[in-house]
Amino acid sequence: MSEKIDWAYTEIVKDHFLNPRNYIMGDEENFKADGEGIVGNPICGDQMLVKIKVKDGKISDIGWKTYGCASAIASTSALSELAKGRTLSDAEKISAEEICDFLGGLPKQKFHCSVLGHQALKKAIENYKSKITEKKS
Ligand code: FES
Image (cartoon, rainbow, N blue to C red; front, side, top):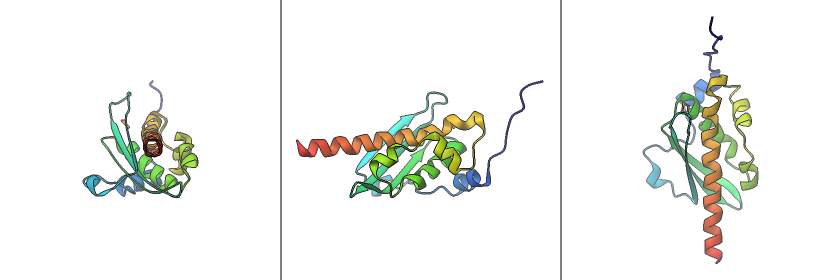
């Protein structure tokens, strides 16, 4: 017998997959970002783009798009809700575990999908900081 597989998604995951928050697919040009980051998932080859607007050291707005799966969409929707309004240093600390907790859990075989969004967010913050450094020099 093979290992029992957990197929269940929580209602929160389903809601964020079906009604993703802060999703900018098709509207990227109108989202004037202060920083952006893109990452790929080496496990499955999916891609994630995260864009941020920054005001007074906090993430005032966030948008994202992906070629990822349902778990990646739900996870990044959750991430966008968790990140908005946080200081950059607090937003950098968002972890895959925090995203999974927010969603009420993910099947363990889909946990890797929850890392795409926050890795792209970290890159977007780095991109923003590098632009600030360039402006100062
Ligand atoms: S299978 Fe690729 S991000 Fe989920």
